[in-house]
Length: 91
Image (cartoon, rainbow, N blue to C red; front, side, top):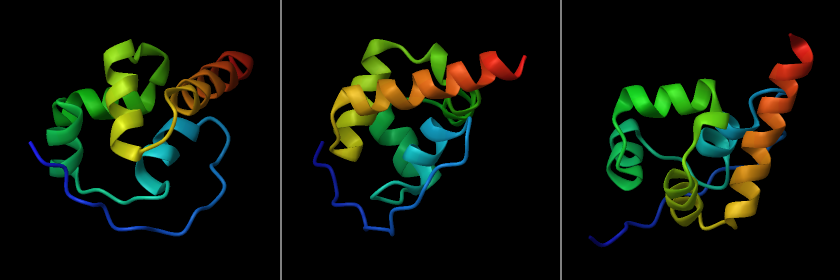
């Protein structure tokens, strides 16, 4: 399946505890829900669950996110880890 080129959007700073979601929604590219579902091979519900708790991302999901956003998988994992640590310190 050929991947369409996503439209670029302005980079910004992510709110604490929402780095993964922000990366996915407001990073360099902007995607519709349908595009995310198709490219990440996830249901709408799974995407929302991963945004709410990125520590539950599988390696395969992290790799697909990195591929879609054309960023290193380490960046995806760092955002997920930062969110998990923020959530942990808040509790």
